[in-house]
Length: 331
Image (cartoon, rainbow, N blue to C red; front, side, top):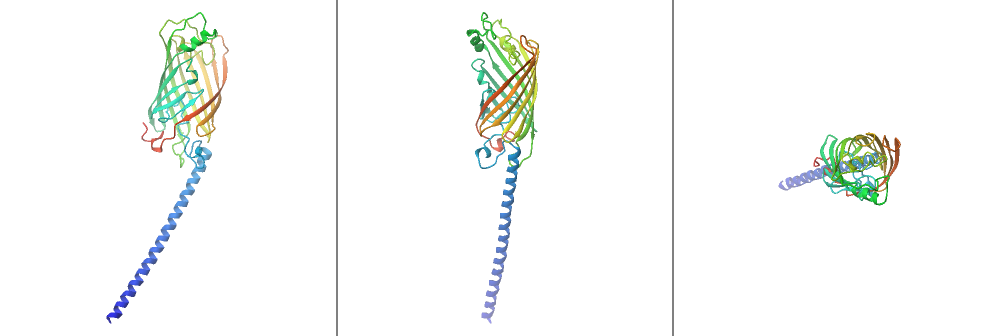
């Protein structure tokens, strides 16, 4: 009798274990299938987001090439006259546009290296505000045309300076207020990438002569108004507005309109600039455009236009999302 009961208990225990094994196996299979389905769905969504970014966002990260893996930085859209600054230890070397270098988050140095030999110049740009897609910075700098004017005098360039006039040392001082508003599309891969930026600002330049100056205004569009602060204690003020737009993945368009008033002949001037920037690789771009000037300068026509060509090499690398231009850690 005892043997029969033990046999029954053993059979019952085996049956219970078999049922439990079957239930656990079916449950694991169900979870395993759900896991695989979730991975496939996630991969599908990522591909869809990358395809959308590739069509509309010039700097969105997509796979396969270095240009498509996030190497391009979202600070490339923020130009020198925008209200934002570039990354720490990043920057660019350009021919026409200012060369820049990020000293720290929210602080950068700028210089027009093409004219540094004739007009040494250095500017500091500081971002003071970054909230709700609004950016506010100030730019301050010093420059002098002393070496350039002596260069022109030694070579008898009388259209720039009279050979019989001594060249005084005059220090030009620049102060600017720059404000930008970013407009951003919500994308899955790069949700903080601006699609276009509206810029505006106001500036004031004045000259500080260290010697008595007998220099006359340098004639010509794009220089007569700016020479006011380089030849004596003259000044010029200006206000501007413009926009930077991402046309597609590798093209940026930058356009602005600037009004000048100051102690130059005619007292008033208007300049309009349009540039298209084409990215040839991860860090190299070529820009083409023009500048138009309308003014009443002495001994020149009322209208002037020049073509603009530029090559830019971008330095540095993209920062992490947490420290990006819109991240909470950036101040």
